[in-house]
Length: 597
Image (cartoon, rainbow, N blue to C red; front, side, top):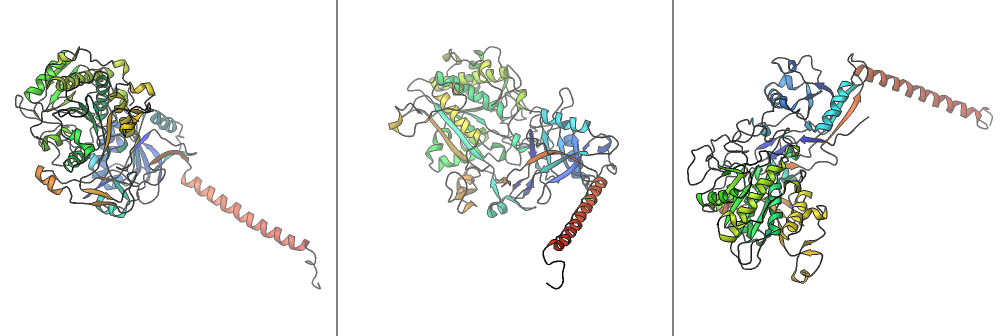
C-alpha cells in the first residue's frame, strides 16, 4: 500500500559556488522510516535514546525551527532520524520562526542601503543550512491523512506500523558546488524568465513608467517560494489587476506608455533585474523598454492588511504623487516607511531586500522610484514559513493596492507626475480577483500564463474571459495586425539567470551542445556599478518522479524476518517438489524404466 502524497513540498538541496544548502536523501536511493510523532520530551537535551533509529519525525510547523537547530547541534540525536514531515499550521497556535536570514538577504551585498537593519527579525537563517535528512511540508489535506494514519497505528507495537517513503535523490555528488555540477551537466542554474508587457502609445514616445513585481522568493521548501500572502504572489496579483485596469483605460496618444514587469529569481541574487539591465546595456532590444524607465513603482508584499500601505525608497515628488493618488482610493491609509532602519525624513528611504528596485537604484541612482508594502520597517513574522499560503490572501487588500498602482502610474504617464485626480475612471473590484493565481531556458507554466495574461490585459481584454488560456498571441509581424488570432500588443520574455553564466549551443528550449559555462562577459559592466559576486545557485537534474513522498504500512523487523523465513521455506518446498516431479516424469517416459534399451 503506497498512497502518494502530491499535496506536499520538498526541501531540496541547492548548490552555490562555495557549497550547498537545503535537503537531500543520503546516498542514491529513497529512504523509508516508521512515522514518529515528535513530542516536547523528544526535543529535550540529551534525549533520543528511546527513539528508534531510522524514524521519520512528524512535527508541527511551530516546532520546525527547533527541530532544525537540534539536527545541526546534536549529531547523535540527528542520527535517529531518516526524515521529517511538517504538518500544516493549525490556526490559533504559535507561529513558527522564519527560516530566512535576519537581514532578509541570502548573502551580504544584497541588503540595499542598510545592511545592519534586521528586515526579518524573526529570521533564523536555516534556509542556508545543509540539512542531513529530507523534509516535506504538508498542506492541510495531506496533514489530515498523516494524522489519520497515525491514529490507526496499533498502540501495542503489534501489526504493521505507518511509515513514509521519501525520495529526494540528486544527480549531483555529495559535497559538489554549482560550478562543478554545471561543468558535469548534473544540475541547472536557478532562474527563469522575466515577463513584461506595455500598455499605451506605440512608436516614438517618452520613456515608460515601469510597474514591477517579483514572481518568486527564497524558501526552505523551494517550490513554495513566493506563494503566500506575505510573499511575492500578493504583489504580483495586485500588479496583474492594475494592468487589467489600465489596459481598459490606457494613457492617451503622446503620453508615456506603462510597462508591467514580473521579475524572476530576485531573492537568489537579483537574477531577473540584474540580467535584464545587463542585456539592455549589451543592446538586447527585448530588454530596452523595462530597463530604461522614467520612473519605477514596485509592488511588494501587499496581501494581508486591507487599506494600509507603506512607501519605501521614495523621493518627495514620488511620494507626493502616491499620496494624491491614494486620496482617491476609498479607505486607503498611506504612510512613508522608515529609511531602512534609519530616521524618517530623508530624501528617500531604504529598500526592502529582494526587491528589483535595488538593482535599478544601483544602475540608475537618480531614477525616481518607490516600493509599496503592507509593512513598515520589518517583515511579518510568518513571511517565508509553511504557514504563509495563498489561502491567507485578503482580496480587499489586493484591490486597494492595485487601484493605487493604477492611478499613480496613469498620473505619471499622463502628466509626468501630476495629481491622482487625472484618473477618475480607474477602479479595481475585489470580487473580480482570484485567490489562485527548472531550466532557465525552458518557459514554465507560470511564465507562459503571465505573458498571456499581461498581453490580454494590455490589449484591454479581460484575461479571465478566455479562462486564463488566451487564444490570441502577441503579433510577430505587421502583416498579422489584421488577423483575428493575434493581439496588437508588446509582450516579451527576457531570460533570468546569472550574468556569470552563458549557455553555449543552446537551442532556446533547453540546454544542449556545450551547455552552461562561466563567463567574464559582464565583468566590466558589473564592476562599473559595484555589483557583488554572484553565488550562482543551481538545482539538481532530478531523476524522473523525484522529489516524491508516499505513505505505507510496514511490518516490524521480527515480522519481516518471519515472512522472509516463511518465504524461504516455501521456495525450498517448491524446489523439492519440482525435483520430485522431474524424477517421476523420467519414470513415465518410454524406455526410462529399463536398462537394456
